[in-house]
Image 1 (cartoon, rainbow, N blue to C red):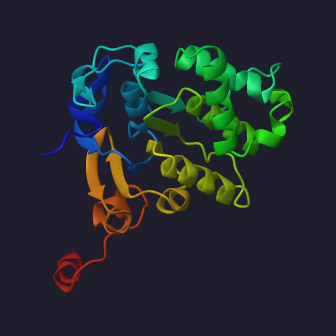
Image 2: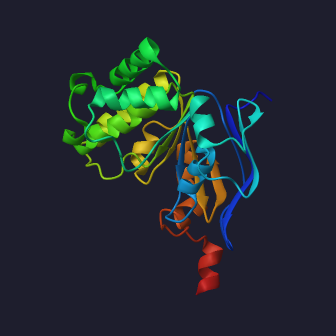
Image 3: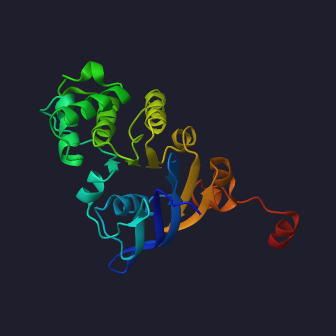
Length: 252
């Protein structure tokens, strides 16, 4: 079996007596867009935090490029190619778009001088923010702040990009540009792990879906198969499984 780019083994996380993640085993291959769905409280954001290194696991391990990085902190992971883009953009509002990306390149990836500038410019191009390079981040509309949040992560030259509900708060009209952005990131060679409540945005790009509930994995596979799963439909989509003839008689 080939080495996965990102992998968890028996991963668990508890906060006191509350078990948020339990026994998670999954692999992310180079070039995948893995979508993660689940109801509120399923553990999705905690999983992303564990993968990014800002929250340590209580049990199990995280492997990146075949190396056990379980105890590596977030800044080490950022320097070695794991970047996170958060649901609520938090740019430096008084800085320009380009200056924000230079911060990402310098402090995220440790780049300097011309190398940092080249990485920031590349991130501008990938996210279609070049025309707004000199605009103050505080002047951007929400969609462009979302682009900037992704661009700042890309400026650190990641191999893996963790996306935390980046479609949240956008209108239906604003979703297609965001979906195109994720496609562009994928086509640039970056592997994407994306948690999202806007399922049709995920299915437009994701090559695979996982569904979590109460910190446990209940489905993993092709998007159409996961969404058709009776357990996923009942737990996540709120659709009761159809009763067979025998079940209907039993309930009568």
